[in-house]
Structure formats: C-alpha cells, structure tokens
Length: 452
Image (tube, rainbow, N blue to C red; front, side):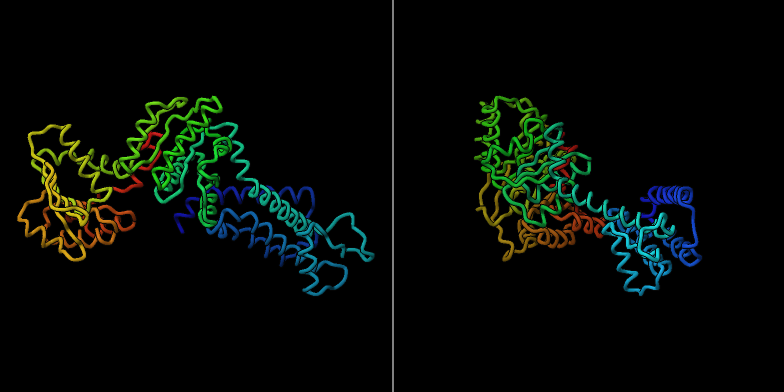
C-alpha cells in the first residue's frame, strides 16, 4: 500500500488542487445558499477528503466513481430536503437518477416551472451527473474506436513493430516492446477472446487475418514498420509469410523500410530453404535475420561462461532436445574459436539416441522413468566438470537437479526453466549450492538483445 501511495502521490496532490480550484469557481459564480447546510457540508467534505483512498485501488475508473458518487450524494440530499413538497426516499432517488439522463425534475417551484436559479447543492448534482454521463459516452466511443484510431496512426506515421504469429514465445517480445513504449501490431489467424482482450489492455493492436492474405500487409502498414518479426509455431508458416511479403513488395513495387526483419526457424531443413531464398530476395532494404530462441539462449550462456574452456571440460548434457542440442553445438563453436590448449568432451544422455560416439560427443541411451540419472553417472566412473539438465518439463529439471546437487556438490549443474517463478524460488532456496540457470527464452526476446 505504501508503494502504491508513493507511485500516485503526484496524482493525489493534483486532485486536491483541482478540487480546490473548482470549489472556488463554484463559490464565485454561484454563491453558496441555505441548501449547503451543516450536515451535507460535513458529508461532502468527508467524501472529498477521503476519496483518494479509491485511487489506491483504481485510477482508471476514479473519475467516473468520483462524479457518480458526488452527483448521488448531493442530488439525493437536495431533492429530499429542498423540494417544495415532501417527497419520499424513493422519489428523491428517482429524481437523482434522472440527472444521469440529463433530465432535472422541477420540484423547486409550486407550479412546476423552471426556476431562474437552482439550489447550490442541486447545481453541484446536475453538473456532476451531466459530466459523468457525457464522459462515459465519450470514453465508450473512444474505446470502441481505439483500435481503429491506433491503427490509423500506425498507417500514417509508421515506426511500429509488426509481429506475425502470437504464441507463448512471441508474447515475451511483445511484452518487452510495450514496456519500452513501442507501438506493436500483432497479426495471427485466430485469437481467443481472452487473449485478444489481454493484448488490447496492453494497448496492442490486434489483427486477425489468414497468413496467405496479402491485403493484411496494407492493413498493418508493413511498408512503414520499424521491424517485422515472423514468429509462427510452424517454420513453414513463417517461411511462407516471408515469401508472401516479398511477393507483396514486388507486386506493389515498393521497398519495405524496416530496419530489421527477424524470422524464427528451428528445423534445419527450413534454414537451408531460407538461406536459398534470401540469396535471391529483393525489395528488402533492412537486415533479414534468422533466429532460433534456443540457439540464442545457448549463445548468450556461452558468451557469459567462455571461461569454462580455460581448462579441460567434460560436459554432461541430460536431454538432447532443442536446447540440449544448441548447448552442445554452440559449446563446440565457442571452443574452436577460442582455440585453447584445453580438451573438450561432451556426453549426451537421451532416450532418443543410441550408444555411439561422434567426436567430441558420446551419445548414451537413457530412459528417465526407468533409469536413475544419479546411478548412471556413478556407474560411468567419469568426472563431469559441468552438468546441463535439458528435460522437457520444469519439474523434471528441478527434481533431477536437486538430487544430483546432493551427490555432486562441487559440480556446477545448469537447468533450464520456462517459468521464471520456479527459477527465482530455486535460486533463493539454493543460493549457495551448485544449482544454476542456463537462462530463459524471455532473456533473449527483448528489444535491446535483438537490436530492434
């Protein structure tokens, strides 16, 4: 609560200043009369003084709540106590709610005619109610048109970031771009209502369109985008979209002005097809860059841990999935570039490999449900300088890592997690142990890291 208070302190100070100014203007242009008796003065003063408490819970709807409650308090009290006739509580409430419809019940003269001036309390009520209703209408209109307005600005001025393909990975990049105040447009074939609502709350423009519809490039102003990221789950979809983008630029005879285009590819077959395509591509003024998030995680890890190769290293990689494969490949590249006199050996344990050796890698069949990782390591009677656990589920990495750390306390054990909360809890609980993190996908999907 204190943190929230410090964050909105300037808003609360501004609120008290504005309320004071409005009150002074009311007094100057509409002198206070007997309608402002002692009771309502106390009630309204308490409301005005205590209202900032509401701001601690919601700033987005604070103005609406303020105007609604102010009109309700002043209107009900005014109609109930200052009408010509004695009206019931029900009537006073009904007259008050008519104010929100911009209709004032004339119950302050004996013949029902409109008086020249209304009681000061009713002036507060009717203007507050009118302001509430009008602002609500305009805000509703803006929120209905907000997507079109934002899209219009992107089409006219450009400079936005285009992300084709929404999934768990691309969300990290989208989230980081928004944190940096960038305008983002996300295009995919289908969004669930919850996903679309969540993205729009993040002030992200969402466009739902088939990947083979070239009209979407006009709609999202692809030719004026600052960067374009192709991040579909399927490599062929991203590659197909890149080809459609090239076709669009040729058909329209325009040169796309992006500074960088990123295309995420995992399968080596599509990497080769992409390289062949890029050798012939035209109409792309910016840099086209192929990326693989697991490869980037591995590259970042080895850049920060190149000292491992200062001495002989024998790496044990448990799980030869996308990350395990990249950890191994980048380790070999890094070792060959440094060209030390040290020796590098890699042992891979995975249930999808057979026992074989391809220098410097030795593959060993390993079935986790049936085989004990600890027992296999002990049976091999080898000294592993570093252990990498790259299994498919966070809890498996966690359980195997904790068990190994108890038997191999002096051996660094690196684990990969998709959930950063698990990583944080582990680091706190085992701050002085051998357990460490290889890094996360979200660490490499940032504006700064990708130079967007």
